[in-house]
Image (tube, rainbow, N blue to C red):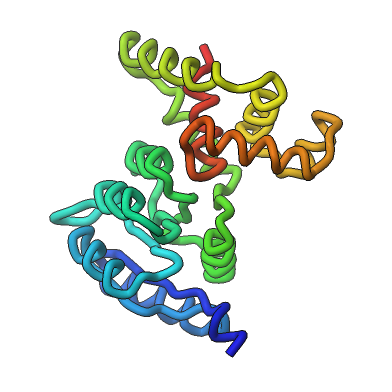
Length: 225
């Protein structure tokens, strides 16, 4: 009974049937993971998630009818949403960035080795982000890349306004999170306890109205010149 309670329920959303089949085989072979349903587009994903109430949704970014970004935004705006892990290729940085801003906990490339996909699902199920260093670099580049000066100024001002509500220590913590540090490393950098780091991070979630550390990192990047 205890193992049943800990079983992570997964929904796979991808328009490619072969991709869904491969992911089902990879995930379904693990004792602590189970695939409860599949969907071929964003519209179907909304219905399936409402019916199955999974812990994790593996969501393709580009799909016909309704893409993964739109579906993710709707799912995460609902009460008690699932954790969302985006499936992508490097040619879809902009959509992935939008999904991360919406609250997705991370993304994996479709050619990621099976063992890493499994670990990513487990990590997201625990509420932790999944951002590989190489992929993170691409997303940060997309977040800070060329755009109109007016759009850049607007996003920078909005981010700075939100960050202005923080205490100095909270801002330091946010900056460390944006640098990709975990709690232990942040504690060392700021010379505080891990418990204090966790308290600051919890405060960041509340003050900034964000759901995860990825959104904090993106907000800090937006505020930079």
